[in-house]
Each structure stands twice: as structure tokens, then as C-alpha cells.
Length: 253
Image (tube, rainbow, N blue to C red; front, side):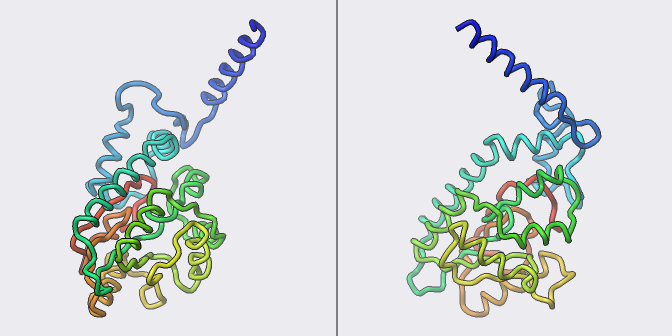
């Protein structure tokens, strides 16, 4: 028993040593917190991001890489998404579909339905790289976000039409995105809307506003709109209510 206890102690020491040795982003440790209530102001920074007070940032600040890694990977992010999904389901139950097939919800895809966490972890949450992201997304390996898969089926079961609206390039990523969604459990959506050639170079707000206007012109009533960036939720025909999902990994204007 003493030998077993000693081995466990050494394993713990080695693990702690390995954690301490791992350094990212100019020396910021990936584990969190290194000390204090909010060292580096990273919790405050994340709140500013989620409240849309921090804009046009290109990468997670170096001192906060460890904080974001821990937030996204160690359970809090999943709990936050689950809580938001519960709120959406409760709202949808209080404003049920009318039964004429025209009540709709619009869901973003990246880091709303499908997770890009493995990609951004590998990049240490650095600046957006269009070519690298295209290569990642074309693999069709993004995990589905469990709470959002469940919400998707709740909305479908409630008689809502569900439209998936993403800024992904339709020509380059259309097939892989459709396959990825199906593999992740998002089957039976009413339409997958991706960025066509005509909207390349346009902001997310401009592109998504135009597509939501198109849905409204077809007679759909957008009862809710869900996205991980404020640019998913702003502009024309945003919906009766919008729901912001957490994402401190990157900014989309």
C-alpha cells in the first residue's frame, strides 16, 4: 500500500511539473488560474467580449490564452451553452409554432451547432487564418455541440422550421458542411444557407440580414435567432428574440 501511495504521489508530482512546463503565447501558462481572483483581467475581458463591448480584436490576449483554454475545456463553457439552450427551449415552449409551417428559427453553425474548439486550441486561439480554417472545415470533423443538438430536435419537434445560416463559403465548404452536420446529428433542417459568391467580402451582418430578409419575403416568421457572435444577431429581420451563445475564441465583425 505504501508503494502504491508513493507511485501515486510521484504521478501527481510529474503531472504538476508537466503542467508548469507547458508555456504558450509569450510565456502564458495554459492552466488557469496562476493566482489571484482575476489575474490579467481575463474574466473581465471575456465579459466584455460576450457583452459586445470588446470589438475588432484579432486574437485572444496572450495572458488570457490559458484562461480561455480552461473555460472552453474544463466544463464551464458546456454548462453555459446548456443553460442558454434551456432558456431557448423554455421560450420556444411559451411561443409555440402556429401550425401553418411558417414559424421559423435561424441557427448559426460555427460554434453554435458545430464546435471548432480543436482547431482553435491547436492555434493557441491566435488570429483567424482563412486558408487554415478552410482546410479544417473541409475535413467535416467538427464535433456537434451536444446541448445544441438536443435543442435542434426540440425545435423540430415543436413544429418549427429550422434554417441553418452560416458565413462559410458555399462553393468551397458546402458539401463538407452538410456531411458534417448530418454526422453530428443535425438532420432534417429545412435549409442550409451558406455564403454565395455574391456575398464574398461582405460583413456577416450584411450577408445574414439579406438572407433573413429573403426568408421573411417567403412568408416565414423568424421567432428566434441563435448565434455565437453579435454579428449573427444584428441587422434586418433578426427575429422576435435573439440568443447569444458564448464564444471567447475569436471575433467576427
